Picture 1 (tube, rainbow, N blue to C red):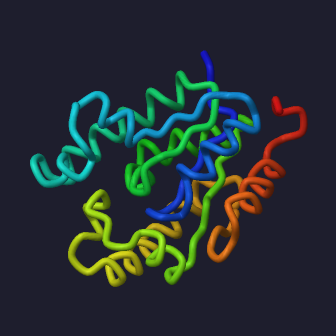
Picture 2 (picture 1 turned 90 degrees about the vertical axis):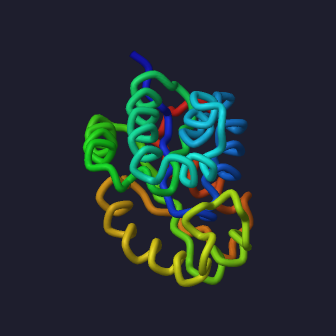
Picture 3 (picture 1 turned 180 degrees about the horizontal axis):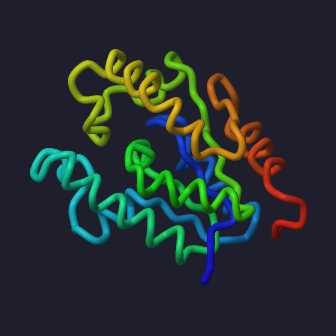
Length: 177
């Protein structure tokens, strides 16, 4: 059974995809994103799944995608921002961390997240009042990210290179580079 070298969690616009792809390239391993897994499985976007089938349907697909990726991916794994809402996913992440896995919470401040997220229609939960919704997401999910994380890296106001370097330093010694 393979398991990821690194799992990235964090809110929308925290840099999971940008940092994850760069860390995977630095380590010479594949990058995987559970939102992309759900989109590939369903043939539609996360935003359209929210609109067409509702958030609970998407969260069920996401929970299954997280379980599959944690059990079968051997590179860098980025989870959708809301993946930590699932108690089952949090249990898997905590167990992965206890078994020596690295879960990095990419933490972002509201001004940086709002600037990065913009008014993107690809972020369904931020469609109505993006700044207020983002503030609520950051506040509500912070304890959930803290529950699963083995390390926290702040991304606000920092270059991707700086964040990547800090994430790489959070990995155990001897991780393939």
